[in-house]
Structures are given as structure tokens and as C-alpha cells.
Length: 95
Image (cartoon, rainbow, N blue to C red; front, top):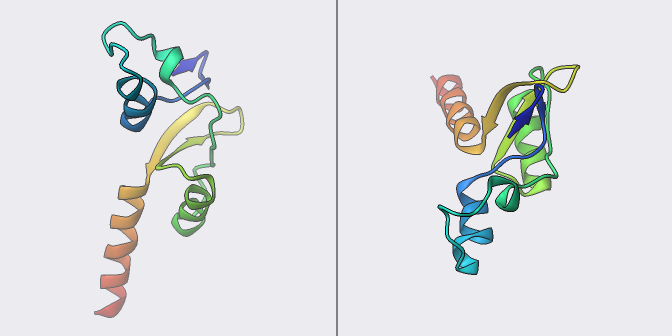
């Protein structure tokens, strides 16, 4: 979720499973604010993939918003994307 360009929360499939479905609430009637994570760990676009993966692991998150110096969302790094990129990099280095 974004307000005036600033991230105020993020909702993922995991949030929906843990905060809505597991509690027997209706996904159709639950407001995003009730299910979203409001403590967001962010990184900057200049962070390298290894560092982003370390931050994700330490924070136990699977998605890491990239924000600029004004805390405006400019991208989203997902653990699956990083794992794929690092895997491709490793294969390239082997050849």
C-alpha cells in the first residue's frame, strides 16, 4: 500500500493466509489495512543482490521494496527473483 508515494504497508499472499484465512475471516470483507504488514524493511536500488538476500534472510521477508532517498517506492526485489539471478550468474561464471 502506498500513500503520497510513501510505503505504509505491504500485503502478500502469506499475510492473507496468516491474518485472514487462518482466522476464518472473509477475504472479500477484510480491509487491506487489517491484513497488511506495516513494519516494512526496505533497501535502496543500489543494494547488490547478495546484500538484499542477507537483509531478507535476517528480516524473514520474501519481498524487499526498493525506495529512493525520499522513501518513494521505485521497485520490488523478491527472493525468487534474486535466487534466479544469482543462479544464472553462477552458471555464467562456470562457463
